[in-house]
Length: 58
Image (cartoon, rainbow, N blue to C red; front, top):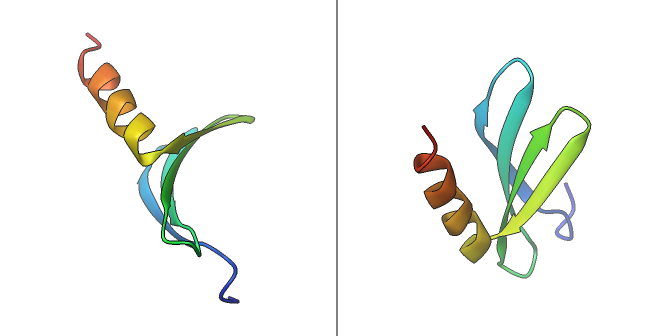
């Protein structure tokens, strides 16, 4: 892995979905949720808000 590539870590995974985080070379952390053939990308502040939304689902 070169210094220009993000360091990635899987947060959670099911048979059909995966959530992972990436530490970008500039130090920013981004979050990603893969839902079948769609990937949603979040900056850290957006990720926090997204988690609040998911926790409120019933």
